Amino acid sequence: MSYKLSFEKKTFVFKRPSGTSRGILTEKHAWFLTVSESDNPEITGIGECSIIPGLSPDFVSFETYEAKLTRFCANPEEEDLSEWPSIKFGWESALLDLKSGRKRFYFDNAFSRRETSLPINGLIWMGDEAFMREQIEDKLAAGFTTIKMKIGAIDFETEIKLLQSIRDRYSEDEITLRVDANGAFSPAEAPKKLSALHRLRIHSIEQPIKAGQWDEMKNLCRSTPLPIALDEELIGIYSTRAKELLLDRIRPQFIILKPSLHGGISGTQEWIALAEERQIPWWMTSALESNIGLEVICQLAGNYRNELPQGLGTGSLYVENEPSDLVVENGRIFYSK
Image 1 (cartoon, rainbow, N blue to C red):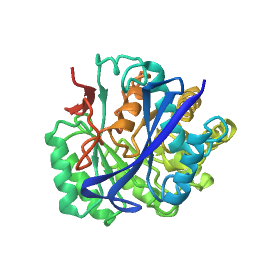
Image 2 (spheres, rainbow, N blue to C red; image 1 turned 120 degrees about the vertical axis):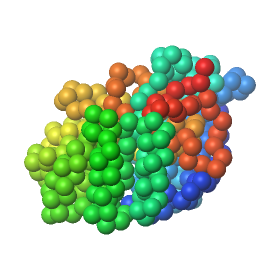
Image 3 (spheres, rainbow, N blue to C red; image 1 turned 90 degrees about the horizontal axis):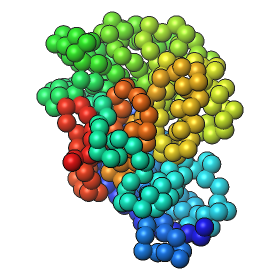
């Protein structure tokens, strides 16, 4: 099959600067990849190639990224995307959209057919104590029963105090608390901090120490009182054998999957298959894609029977987003009827 491809860059502005361990995010860059069959250009598919500078393994500069996109659009059969997960995600999405024959219908399942919803967590961004407390109150008022708080930006005792303020009001049966350290702890201090978090009956912690320290992470996962979820640890691991080695060596309690970072759609599906073989639970999150990419990830998650809350409530982050029928209510995401 011969395809015609093109791409267009979009920049999305955050409604409010959002803090991460890699700094403050004020805007998000994405490239929309459009594909059609050469002999039928009227029917198109669209996918999103979305990056986070400093985190996306395939982004070094705008020049090199767009040069790769240009080469790929000219010769999609010849360009290798195995180490370009964000472009691979956009390409796989666009092809699925094209082949479905229905606008932004990537997977045929109960979610995409508007028959069911997915549970999601409410995300609390890093910031000063007042800002984080405000977000917590907003998420609780919106009906979320799973709250995920990014930690590591302010002092640990203040973060513990914020989490304690939730736990004082709600038991673990009423509100599930997750935290994401983004590698903020040193291996030496991690055990003590995990114990402090465990006393608050935290569900899990994402990436307590920096990625790449397999032996230290293995030891943490074996001794932790608090389930550990790998996230950044999975970035840059592309071959099946390397994925197997990581899972077998570290044996995490959970893994977290972002298709734009973890090998596109097919790479994410392989991670899931390997994790399930080892009885390692998982959930998906967006990498802050616009509504185009978010719809793909939601529909992909809808292909699996997984009642763990997903990290997919990011559609309202931007001043202007792509139009979408996705709705978030009471801690669940679904398509409006």
